[in-house]
Image (cartoon, rainbow, N blue to C red; front, top):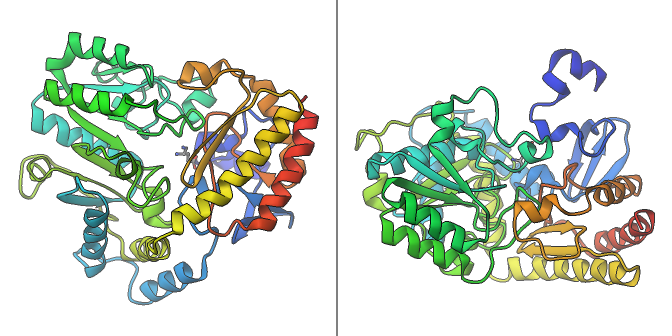
Length: 419
Ligand code: HOZ
């Protein structure tokens, strides 16, 4: 890491990797296999970060690796249409009812930034509404009250963003429908879009309260504001398709990433035909990318999704995760430690708090020092959790009963250590 720091700002290529909340130096990773990581010194860790979400089947899943090899042999990229692009677009359309048309890009940042541009083009309005603690990538208009690394480093609004850009973004507390109604009452006519993670995964894992997303859908429809679900984290992880499928809510535009690339850079955005037809070459809204639809990355994504497709995949692995979380909850109760646990399919979160966590303010008010001591102790037991209290944890089909048992032994020790 010391060597990395002489060449890379902070030694990391994305700020939350720097362990600033946890203390100490980040692990330098050599390899991953199944549910495990191996660091540069040869130590093995059970991994609940999973590359921040994409690895639905753990590291180097054999079928995914085979698909990548086969695609690479045929060429690394063409910057021209391929069949794999259409296969992915058809798969996404089939899984998400609101996707009439979909465009492939390379990162969640790009997907969200581009969806906003389409929303502004289609509505002719400029204001955008988001939620405090939601993170939609690092495009200028979205670095306002942002979660993830911004919340971790206490820089929810970035320098370098022109004031005029930041002023075009309004932010409100997550899970607060009266607050949303107030914003719409005041600014509804100028709001191009409301962008939201339907399950917030960048302030820990915070589920929407019953009726919240439905209420937002109604507000958006009533004011001609487009509803954008950022399912970069929850897409094909909370459920096949995404949270919107499980919740039965159809947004106007959806952003995807992470799992659909199986660990390689694939993301997508799509939605109603009339909106997506605004994009060039059909329309006047421009968005492009040399690596968009890269065939090797798509091979990883398609193989990952093929493995998740069989009926019962999500319930089976989510049930194993639920069992683990019930075990952790019982351990905390037995020790008199206030711990909130949350789950959305194969994502989970934990927060040391007496009261349910419904917003960024709740997450910030939790016992962050206890989080630190717990996470450090887990690391000593060779369990790798996100180095930030404002990130979700992940689970994969590679995490088996023995891994769950090892985790529960470690959580018992860690809860003792942070009493
Ligand atoms: N987008 C990730 C947090 N939700 C961070 C990714 C990274 O730092 O690698």
